[in-house]
Length: 120
Image: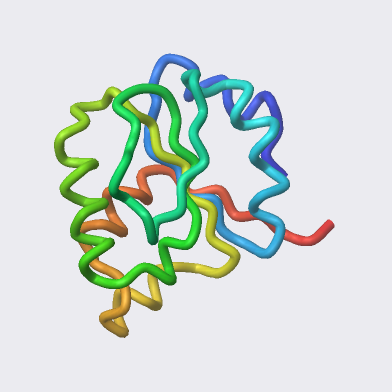
């Protein structure tokens, strides 16, 4: 379980974070209290209007098609660190990379820090 002490090393650095597991969303409240405001919740299926500051909570990335993934990667490429992305995934995304369902470049851009959520 992610604790406040786990977040101390991240306070000065705002990496993209991948939350993985069936209870990944339960980690969000504690994590978001440490992130850049404003916080935007976005579906990866709809990347047309993306913010240019703050924190983006990204959902549905495993369900997005290659065009949406490419658009998301291109948007991330233009941010220059102005936006922190927290991706919430109920299951590991790396197997999708091997199957060709998820862009490897996008996976590594989103997966800078991984926090696995388990059942407790």
